[in-house]
Length: 130
Image (cartoon, rainbow, N blue to C red; front, top):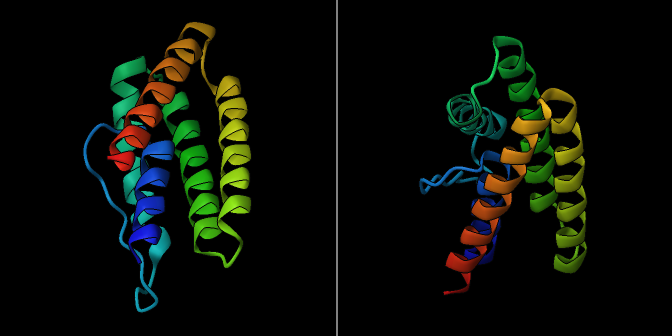
């Protein structure tokens, strides 16, 4: 159960790139787990909107992408796949998300997005190792 929670936290931070301690608690009795992911994605978009000074069109596109990848990553984490395979697939999904963001952001925005994203992921991984 603790391993499952750690993966959920990593997903939230990977997708949301937030510095706050946002945790998406999932369980079998929950009616709409994707709704929580959408809420977290919205918070992430708010963060990026301020950080990258996004246009309204970019906000809309980014929100759709963040939700799309958050749902994919969460479903992967919930799957019965081996942990090693999950980690590989999560890394692949992260790279796809980065690629899709390149199409939404300007070059300076994208460079800042990558820098902050990777920094947040490293910070989160470091916290989980402690």
